[in-house]
Image (tube, rainbow, N blue to C red; front, side):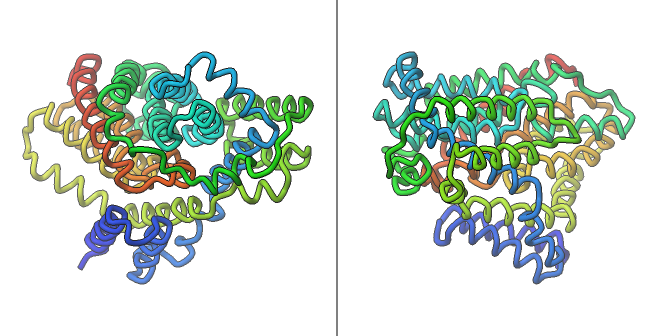
Length: 423
């Protein structure tokens, strides 16, 4: 049996366990990576390499930053102000945070956006007496589809553009992606305010014990103007640095520095900083990173793409090709990190569609949109894994609303991509 087939079988078994929830998601992710090691598909060191990688550092550091907003009393103050504007209705709070997440993620990492908004969403929801868990998925998903507003909205967008340059085909301009990103974002928000909210987890499934530790509500938290002001300055600098995303100061390094400074200045104690870091989330990220590596090294992703192309024939319908690319990349990005997915499929699909005489920019746009659509699983993106523990969310809590949103985004993309970039 080929490594590609073994990898796909392992991924299929993992999906079954994710859906049935017989084992914790973190354990399933690490077991999946372990099987790939035993089969010789990835090296033993690659199973744990993510723990020293930038994604783990970014996620852990942003957990500390988010918790510091509670421990300085900022989240409570912001919640009081926001509730006056949003009211106590579920729809009002939902639309407010989806809009904020969408706009900020146009210039900032989606993981960073979710980590920064998470404490405020929790606090506002608790103040308003609405379900915490029902607010988390719309906010997280908005941070993902908001990445389609600009070229710098997601690392996967930059990867796709770089691959286009390497292949010698026209690249995308900074705001070009927004031509389809704006209608996608509008459709996503409307979806959750109408039929989408019916598929959200009923009631409030949030982990009260974890939220008490994360928010510091299990002890008296007094508002300290000096520490609060310092925390806001650190947060502002962090946002600017992440928006610039300099090679000298990458996002994970800036986030780590911010967490260190918050502890050093007493904005959050060392023990509270440790408590804010959820190990199960980090294990999910690490395990899925190993599986993502296995998908690339084994040729599993290429096998799927080649099979699809072979089925299309020599002179396929261009709209059908676009649709298949959108579907394939969407499925892959839910099993792989979006950046890894973009790195895999762009150099694979662009030469193929060139042979079909298709517009390469249209296909690149489709890859970007689909790579930022990790809505079917809790492990498809760091934006999703960050909210699993606070909301005590399961696989189907993501899949039910995620499937509907995925269909909506596919329809919008199939309408607008051919309009702006004729095939």
